[in-house]
Length: 289
Image 1 (cartoon, rainbow, N blue to C red):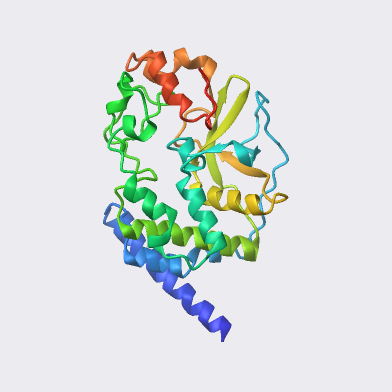
Image 2: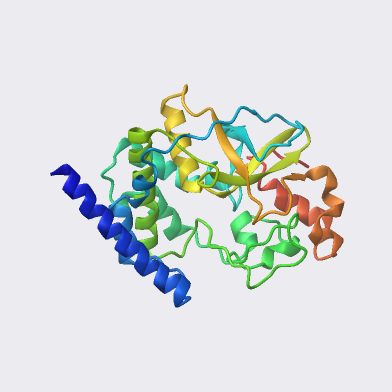
């Protein structure tokens, strides 16, 4: 009976994936979270990709200024920061606090979650509000929905959109994030944490003074779950295998000492001081001035 249920779920998942492929790839409709996408996650479609997968092993533990020749490396779990700054896992930490809530109470309602209230109360319209930049910083007027990094981009590109973890946000999107977190907990409990060379946390290194952070470009929910498990089980997930992102970043390492060569400064879009204040928002609360 269990086999028939599993087989029926797999058929439903394949139908949903075909519908989404047709809409997004063939008809080129922009991706939008819908009830059918929620249903796909309620079926925990991702679990079918994990059956029989062999976990990726990585023997290289990164330390500050260590030479890198490999595409994969282990990063200390305390060194990860979100794509929109350190607040994702530090301070307000909406994803992490929500994952902790789910770990303690898997049946939590969306309206009870920290993420729901966070997105309801935190709705930044520009970089000044999102990153709490000073009033004299020239970057503060950039829309919070534009993806811009002065160490990557020479100018803001209005076509380069990025929706961070903040409001305003539809309730269905919060349900989507919570479902993903719940499924991650369930899958790790059943299969362990089994990343592979393509399905893995991605990003790049930020070096400042005598320290480093790993900026996540893909895998935010995964990291929130791994951090939560580590909080309650200190012997687990102290180091996480990652892969350098070759799509969102042109370099594996962004070093603060090269700030004068950063594209936005070289193009004179912003000053060194403005870029430095912005970079400081990715330093996990440790000032780099």
